[in-house]
Length: 129
Length: 87
Image 1 (cartoon, each protein chain N blue to C red):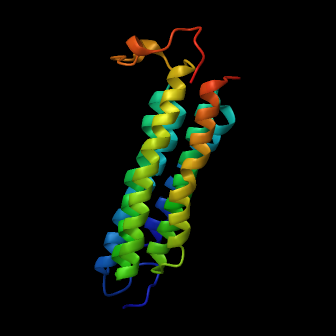
Image 2 (image 1 turned 90 degrees about the vertical axis):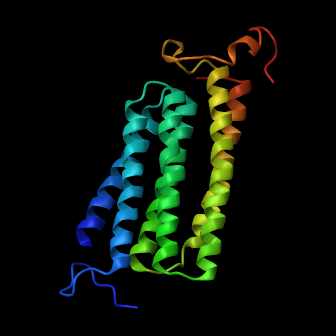
């Protein structure tokens, strides 16, 4: 394994450095997109859409990057476990946050395309579950 | 490679600053909990980027723990907000 030096060596770039650069930049771009989306989007539901980008795609990119740069069985096992648990827990929490936003009216009804939850939503005086 | 590290650090810092601004300004607690999830995801990505650049795997259990327990805060706050809304 070649010694890592920051900066471009005289004998060009390692292939693993190219993969690392591309995947790290992709994950960092997802982080930046989430920050901009959190600042620019108007309500909770659309901010939820922006927030899931680094949680899934950025995490998959960075974990694949770690697994590629030092390839071993333990690293691949931990990488698969990280992606599995993150993709198991992130949709559950996003679902609960979205439902809480719907129940407490923290969304703009004018920008909704469809509202499939409306016919079954609770009447206003029933106790919330 | 140093240019890539600088650009990636700037992009991650921009995302983290956006999340912190939304935590401070967010009109409801749901906005704040979404922004804190984004902050946790940014921290995970920063830890992983450091590991990938320096080619070691020391912090992979930290990433696993953050991926496992990131759900707790947002789920508990969302359940609490569903029943009682103070904002």
